[in-house]
Amino acid sequence: MPVNTESVTLMKPIWIVDDDQSIRFVLEKALLREGLPTRSFTNPREVMKALEAESEGPQVLVSDIRMPGGSGLDLLTAIKQRMPGLPVIIMTAFSDLDSAVSAFSSGAFEYLPKPFDLPKAVELIRRAVGESQREDVAEEKMVDAPEMLGQAPAMQDVFRGIGRLAQSHVTVLITGESGSGKELVAHALHKHSPRANQPFVAINTAAIPKDLLESELFGHERGAFTGAQASRRGRFEQADGGTLFLDEIGDMPFDLQTRLLRVLSDGNFYRVGGHSAVKANVRVIAATHQDLEQRVKEGVFREDLYHRLNVIRLRLPALRERREDVPVLARYFLQRSAQQLGVEPKRMDDAALERLGHFQFPGNVRQLENICHWLTVMAPSQLIEVKDLPPEVLDTGGVSGVPVLTPASSGHDGALSADFVATAGLDAAALLGPSTGAAVWDAGLEQEALALLNAGRTDVWDALTRRFETSLIQAALATTRGRRIEAAQKLGIGRNTITRKIQELGIDES
Figure 1 (tube, rainbow, N blue to C red):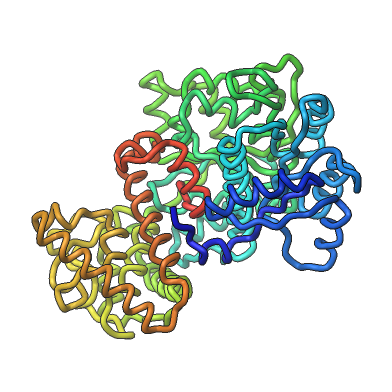
Figure 2 (figure 1 turned 180 degrees about the horizontal axis):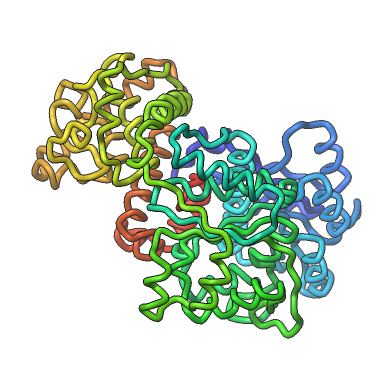
């Protein structure tokens, strides 16, 4: 399979540390075939010199445990002091297993026994890469995300609530429709709290299979279940001292609700397969788009857990309840889309903004963001007029939240943008018939590629591929209400593939 050399060069390398040349060679070649760049070292001293001399470190570190030039365990400790979020995989012979397991207390991601199965080693490194990229995305969001936008009275109530809770450690329940920005509120509550310098850890309880959710939340001990080769910390331990955001709490399995209730009561829990209680100092913020009172009446949500979570409730208004915020949000999203695509930002005239402000936005802020991205690609000029708005805004019978195929939405020349089809989650063949739809889709893709190439872009392959994959996965997750396995089945890909892609692409599932 050909390697996408552009993606290899754009990604930080995997650093391999081993005095055995054959091990380094085998891993280098295997990872290169997978499109993962590498850099090799023969001992820990070389690694530390490289870290001191360069501003950017590795994506993942894979190190032997015993080398003539130093100990892999000492290297792990030193690396974690500099880069606490870096996944480190320790390679070891079976005779060193006890030492390797002890390394987990120093923060090792996983261990890799020698001799190892090469495909399994590559898959393990891929998982570590996904974890690293997820950490990068989370950190970038915390640093670069602007303060929440909104002048509407309903949003000012939310801001006042965040302000009053700034110095509190109390549990908060955020309610609001899908796409209204509940995770942004959780980030703001954390950012303005005494825990701001501690971890913010988020988990979507509806997006993780029931049999894995317990381990994700509470961690597991080595041997707790098939494949548990080492002890792993759960999200509660990862968030120790900070904030844990439990999104879509209304979908949490009933039996796990009991375990969550105990943690909220006394801060103690047990890892899966564990016999010793673990104490975690965590502030819990939960969110849901569901009516929890009704869920309690239906017997699918514990009443005592509901009251434990509902200490302070913040209701996030739907976008149609804060229409005066549409113009400022639209300007912000147009600027951000332009920055992402490497083009000049477009702006809307007053008539277009007024028309947009009358739209119902069933998909809330997330839908407005998608519309602005679509306009950045599809509007023919820098000034967006009413006629350039997508058909569902113009009330021409489009599917709620999704642009539909009309001459106005096809770039005014009948060619449908590939980005439009991907963003909308539509099958052009289903709209136009197999042959015509395929031809239009192909033409739109070619047109989009030519536009980027003519603009002097040198990352066209990666830019279009990432947008296409992101849009497909987001559309599938939207149709399955965030259920990854079902979304993967609909797309015709494996569960591991969709999980890896979500991590690689930094897809927000809130």
